Amino acid sequence: MNDLIKRAGNLLLFATLAVGLIASAFLAGFGVAWGMGAASTRAQSPAPEAVAPSPPPRDLQEAFDIFWEAWKLVQDEYYGAIPAPQTVAYGAIRGALQTLGDPYTSFIEPKIARILQEDASGQFEGIGALVRMNRDNKLEIVRTFEGSPAQKAGLQSGDLVVKVNGQSIVGYSIYEAIALIRGPAGTSVTLTIERPGQREPFEVTVTRARITIPVVEARMLPENIAYIQLFDFSAQATRQLQDQLKALLAQNPQGLILDLRDNPGGFLDQAIQVADLFLDEGIVAYERTKDGEERVFRSKSGDIAERIPMVVLVNAGSASASEIVAGALQDRGRARLVGERTFGKGSVQLSHTLSDGSELRVTIARWFTPNNRAIHGEGLNPDIEVKVEPGTETAGTDPQLQRAVEVLLQGR
Image (cartoon, rainbow, N blue to C red; front, side, top):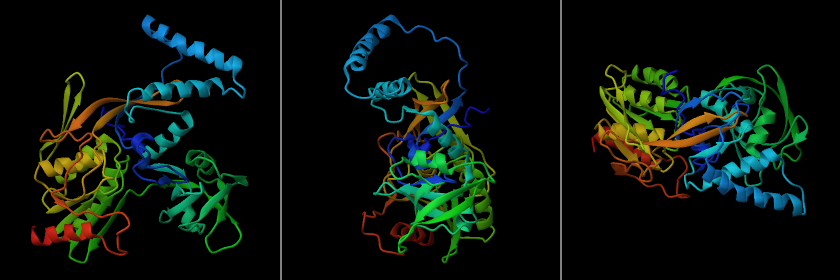
């Protein structure tokens, strides 16, 4: 498998459970999407065979003797229930990783790892909805996907899912809820719904299906400008984006706006392929390890959107793979960036599947733009800054989009 494939930006991780770039989660029955972890992750290593691990170095073994000394006292003296050994082991791993001071080097338990791996593929078997946990710790439907089982069953934005097959999920984590709602295509799940404006909860039975998460939204603006928004860089991103670009370019627009706002990233291979759609031959990004090894990612000439005038919209939620694309387009003089400074996620994670199905993501490198700009902790500054203060947005207006249109129409 190509070394680029399956480099996920935490994807999932969107940033791996680390930074919460977006509060909602894609649940295609349900499937959590990118905002959980935005990191650029390399090909996942397979689960190792069950072989006896080599003994740890003596100094490390001696250092961990104090752990066992302390834990033995807890087991002997603690007034309360002692967690299962696996729970203790997972907690110890997380504690050890926290000493690195890197939120992107992370450990993910098997159940959550399976969900994130499915999400990364861009396809799920479930009901097809975007959801989040609200302030009351209830699972809220943000929207349903067009043509999905959830939409066909009459579920609406704002509905609260309080039970799954009669079992209360109030107080559950979003992943625990997902595990109950997901299931094989063709099977059904009964959800108990609380709907604003209705006094009593009611039940909705939904037949699960195989669903491709829509990651692109496209339309022609009145000014004869093509607008296309990419929500993440999951496995289907380039294909969906290319399909929408073909449809838009067939209408002969005079310019193109690529909206990467609140896009937390995803697979590195998708970032390179997306950038290549708009760039002729040249450098897209550099990847460098701590040992100084360098890898260069390049674009090739001959793609469908290399000539049309374009602007890229970015904000503080544009991270990781979004910054790879935006940085390449900016450095190569292909597009101006409009909006706000980006997040600043410029590290690469190598994902390992452990023997019990859990996942370990380790930061192994950082990436740089074609002009050798380091993005990690810095972000990209837009060519034209248009700030949108929280709470000041006016319904139905988008000053950043309006400014992008002006740039394309007036050239400034």
